[in-house]
Length: 468
Image 1 (cartoon, rainbow, N blue to C red):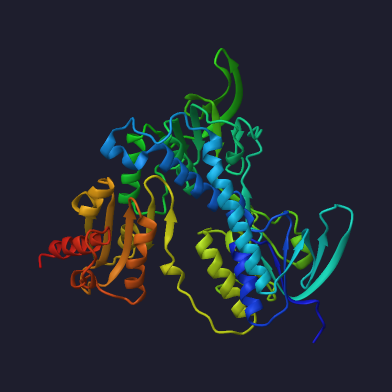
Image 2: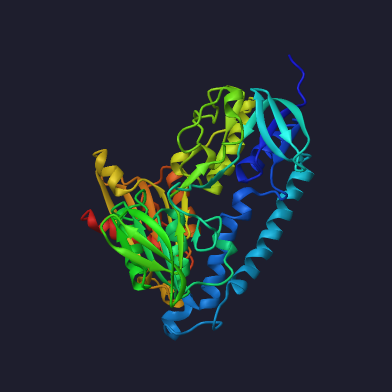
């Protein structure tokens, strides 16, 4: 066997890279993790998941959004909220998460190397040092690509990081605009549209598709759309951006957006969120014999192997679902497979959490998928307004929906919109994993008052629909 410097080299220190490196280290392998930035954590900790979710929590608290059902729409904890107010909490959480991540890597004896990696063969990487002048070559029996993604940039859009922004720029805003236009009704676009509308900004959301979040159950997205409109978000669905230009008038510097339909929209800032592109352009993939698609993503098999058997790819760089939780699991499974350790997971049971306001979480199959596959099903629903806990916390618009087989009564999917959805989903996930029936929720006693009671109410609703 050839002698390599390491058993495993991991490119990227986001959730997928961290988990792959730590899992391999726990198997007593020599591991090095390469990170081109000065801090670990990747997009997840520094510009993506952690900052956006912390920003959301700061908005919910300072705006008093959760309490408005009791104290009126004018209620807020702080008047004249600034970006500085919002980012103070965000920066503190980011620093903590960076420290936790670095400590985890250190105590598992994962060597962290600073620099930009590029392939020099299937087992070889050249590391360009941060000083920009020196480099070194490292070899490994296995390599994991966990470089994540970058905001997709349309060549026809004049991004400037000040008025025309990507999601990576949004946290660099010096002050809150009065109006915001968001292009793209995917996860990131919907999250930021609802976060800023909760602050009272006038938000317009544009997308060429007919509805927001098309992979989510339509009844849930209909509920989200209703809530967005209640918060003064203007939706322009089925519309495509033709051009964006800077505008200077008596109101100052702004942006004008031209739509293909002839409409024009003027806003203080534009957030262009049309997806993410795999961060692979600087890896010299051709040197390892690896292809990428037109979005820079890498194709893998069920074990997260690329077309080169000793090279694996995990996380956002391989595409959907591009969630921190799924990326962690992919990293673990890839490390186990490359070193011959049995490990299994069920991607069909991965829960999705979407941190809009209100938040959404789903697991299992939705109505559209089941109808397409000719599977007979029934649904049961519970609304937060029927539950004492919903009244207590002031969320009367939430909805929990169970989908189960009409004949066997096996649970097939759980879909939730409302406060605590991303926590509440795990009860349904466990029942799905054990192929449980909807009857489980009827026979179970939940703490009172809790949102978990929604499962019991929804189960009774579904059984009643069967005429039983």
